[in-house]
Length: 224
Image 1 (cartoon, rainbow, N blue to C red):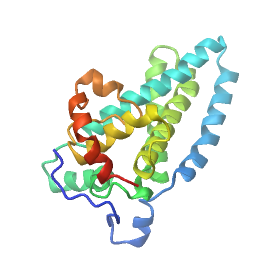
Image 2: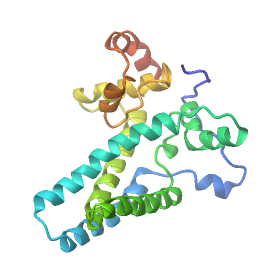
Image 3: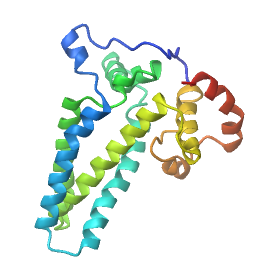
């Protein structure tokens, strides 16, 4: 259950140093501007390097996008909402994600900042290359990883939109409702942001009766 005070205005102060504090903030356009050239080059390199049909190239790319949705769920549920026992771990989790639950409308912290994002992305690229290399598919990382990162960009943009705007299309209402209930009703459910698929698979989806009952309250609390 949500057991902390939620502020729909303001933002957390994570570091005393104004320089470090500045590095905790970002804007979606900055992140897209960083990753689109990287994704484009990797896709180009992959299509030039891999001697196979375009069907398999597309499978690798969209497979990466699908893999992101699973990783998104796992990280959100088991890392960002880890129940820490030490002060250090509690502090790390608060910096990574906890502050977002206290200040969900802080638009400058809805995307991971560039420097930690690039470090983690580089590590993931090497891990994916190693795993695919075990199956003699190492070069496919140049298609799988861009798909994975595009999935991340779409997730981040969806997350930003959910906290900043009303759903632009009727079919998106369920995503908005699911994430708002996660923030304002129960942090132990509704971990999916870009999709509710894995919440349904792993039993962390809000029951339909609860979604209908709580929706008016949630919309009132999160009205833009």
